[in-house]
Structures are given as C-alpha cells and as structure tokens.
Length: 180
Image (tube, rainbow, N blue to C red; front, side):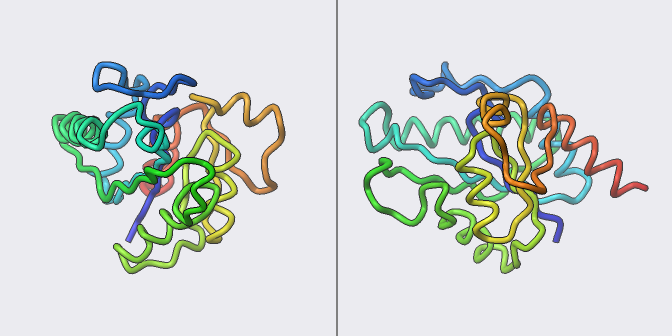
C-alpha cells in the first residue's frame, strides 16, 4: 500500500492563528486539492491527521468540522480522487490525550486502520509537532513551506526531514518517482 499522511491546516488549507472556525474560513491552498486527487488517481491512499483543539476551546462544533471534511472530500472527488481516513484530535493542549500531535496517537490510528507499519511512510506537516509525531512512529517527516512551514524551518528541523514548497510539489515528486 502506498500511504501518504497529511496534516490539514497549513498543508491542505490555509491556516490561521485565530483557528479555522467555519466552512467559509476553510480555504484550500492553491494546488492542494488537485495534488490529493492526482495522488489518489495514481494509487496513493491519502489520509489526514489533524489537531483540532478549537473544538475543546468551543470555537466551533463537531458538525462544523465534519462539514469542512465533507467539503474536502467533495472537492477532491470533483477532481476524480478520493481522501482516505481523516482522524482528528478534538482535545486542548493540556488535556493529556495521546492523540494530540506531537504525540503519535492519530498516526497509530491510521496505521491500525490500514494495517500497515508506518516506518518510512511520509507524514507531511508544517509544524514542529507534526515532524515530532512522524519521528515517534518512525515515519518520514516531511515539511511544507506553506502554513507555518517557513517559521518552523527557521527554527530548525529534525535531521532527515524532507522539505518541499507545498503539497503540489510533493505530489509531483511522488508521482514522478513512481513513474520512473
């Protein structure tokens, strides 16, 4: 199985320090929807692991989060692709859960769902927590420069982290490598 795991905010859609609180605020990064569709059409399973502490903070409801994810699925389907499992952590930073990145709970949930070992699987994110979660399960940390990626890069990233401009450039590299 060719599995790619993505963070959501800052990788697939625009991020905001004020949180993405409504469907209107959920705006795809240019090229990201097409990238997911292209990957899907070339045999990749694209899963999503996203911290959503805005739920615990009362900024938006589970129904709103579900609507955002339904929109993501609809947009990718309109391009002929499919989004795999989407897992999210609804907890706040001090709740002590195992799912909130940098803890690896969501990545383990995806691994269990697909019955795969995550060693070497690319986990794409834009934050230090994303990269740390990848390393915790022996996945390949991949940083995009979108979202908080440039800020994360300026503070230093773990050795062996792959760095790309955006999700579209990752899709291009993976599809090109696979074809060659």
